[in-house]
Length: 356
Ligand code: PHE
Image 1 (cartoon, rainbow, N blue to C red):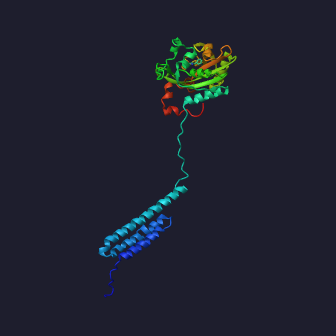
Image 2: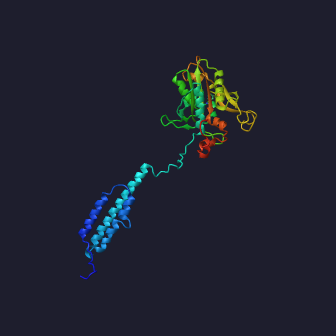
Image 3: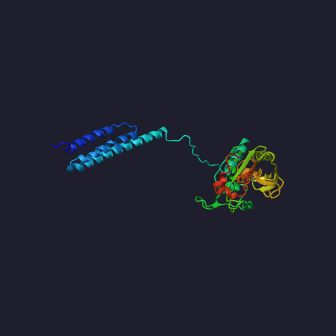
């Protein structure tokens, strides 16, 4: 043998397999923990995978293909262990919250606001509840009896023209006996028919009228009507109740006045005005220079209505009133166009925050 000349080192397949097996066992047993330390030890540029890959050059030519496969498999094995360790450590960090920057300002959760109609309705309801009125509700699709006939508006009565009505064909009975209620007085009829006296209710709800949509009229809007029936109820009670409502709603300096009017279901009937909130009664465009704005209709329940609903009109008397919630809201917030309430423009709606 010539000195200094080393025989080439041949790595047998058995040796290679044994080394790979040993390393695989090591890797499998590698403790969960520092993924980066694992990477440096096995996958880094001076790592064990690289080192064993270097053995390729010592493999006999006829074994190179099989050895290449073995080594590649081993590399993939080590890489997948590394991925596993990385995922575990990421999860641990998330669980500890250590990734969250606690000094960052919180994400704001955008809150909606209540619709101005709801705000005002809630306020009106709460004022009357303090006077002992209970809330009553009824269907929006009504029959002719509850919406008109029981209220002293027999068929062909000229006053039916006062409320242009949406009629609906009745699929059961045929004909057009059904309609969309034109006022919540229909709920009052339903309550009176129950026959439990005394009655002290308010009926808030949506009503429908066949009107052309404009700044001042809409085909649907909201009403709140009231009814008080007991023995010896007088017009003075009506006046005082409404006066209390107005003061609570608009403030103690607001004045009221009653004007005679006509409704088929009340006798006597009146319309109530309040002194203009904009000009304090001095005259402006809102009150059309009169100093007063109309806010509701009212009166003493007509004896025919009591009789129609089975209440003894010799024993009981009552008062009723009805107001449009849109109108009260427009006065309260100085809104000039009724259409804004149903257009769902967020820029309009988000201005109304909190209770009235
Ligand atoms: N129902 C009437 C309307 O819708 C309002 C009203 C109610 C008037 C009660 C008088 C008494 O116009």
